[in-house]
Length: 164
Image (cartoon, rainbow, N blue to C red; front, side, top):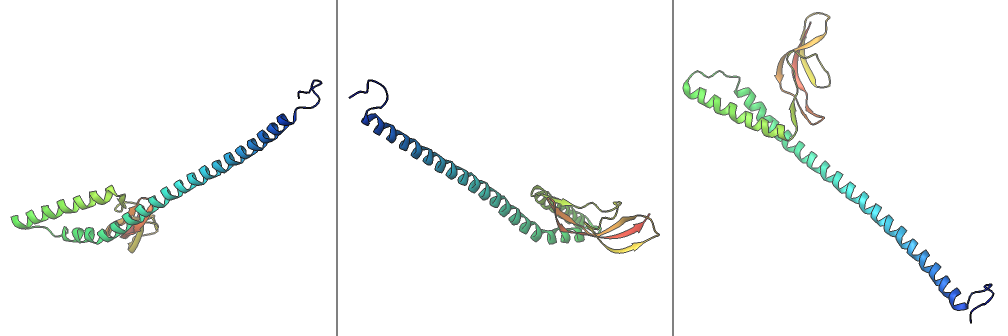
């Protein structure tokens, strides 16, 4: 059943060759589908990671915003000068507690906006008064601290300005 002149292959060989080509096409199709699934999974993995980071950022922002009034209360309480030993002990305890709270919030990305002596920046400073001439405006006093969380402004610093 072999062809001696090489012009035609046996029918069994042709059938096997046809089946081989069909199997190769099917394997290539499955490989393409597998590559698409792998790419879809990688995109899904990246999206879930990004959403997780976004969720953590929003949660940290909510907690930080909730604790800023406590920092304000500490700042206000620490404006009073202690007179007695008991008051000095209370003052030291409040100062220590405020510093611990601030350090914990800084670990979450909270940054105090610099104010006194800084050039006025309308992006981070909210002026309530300005004095002086026509020179560059500089922050002369801080009424209320301003904060950033990462690159996001949480609250502008409430300041008074003075022209240089």
